[in-house]
Image (cartoon, rainbow, N blue to C red):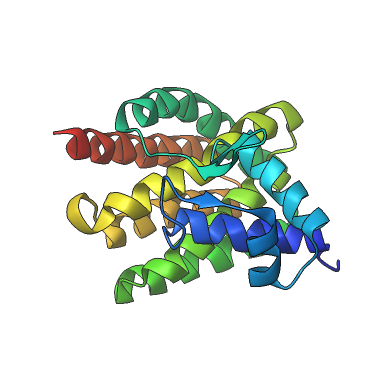
Length: 211
């Protein structure tokens, strides 16, 4: 499927915000972003509205658009919700995945192995986004998917900001790979356990940043 201009703008801006190339607190404008991305202002405006729903930017009428700050305490509250939803998504995906989706999860698991082995943070972030999107599609629960899609970008940005100081990228890659392999193997119980292990690690990581 051909990517729309809005999707193109959204994916480009989301990656730049999540990987801190556009830092928290930055004021941005539709006109500057339009020139930067090489697309019209309407796709950029629609992309920013989507990013605002995901709490990555705040749109201030007549004042501009600001990239949101990172709040560790809010991140811990987010993780309380994420644990329950991610477990549901992982178990549902393991139960409902098609053959093609299982192959895609296996490919992501293999990619996570490679990213962890080389400590490749950008590859890990891109695989994580692909993993999250595939999980939402495979689980087949639009309500859980809607809730989770609001948390994915915030979670990845928080991790990217702090991982060099407090995180273990190879471990994070292995934990993601374990979920992907459980889904690929249609093992519902293992998928739920692997999901809990990942969120447990992320909670410990988030607490370490506060400490």
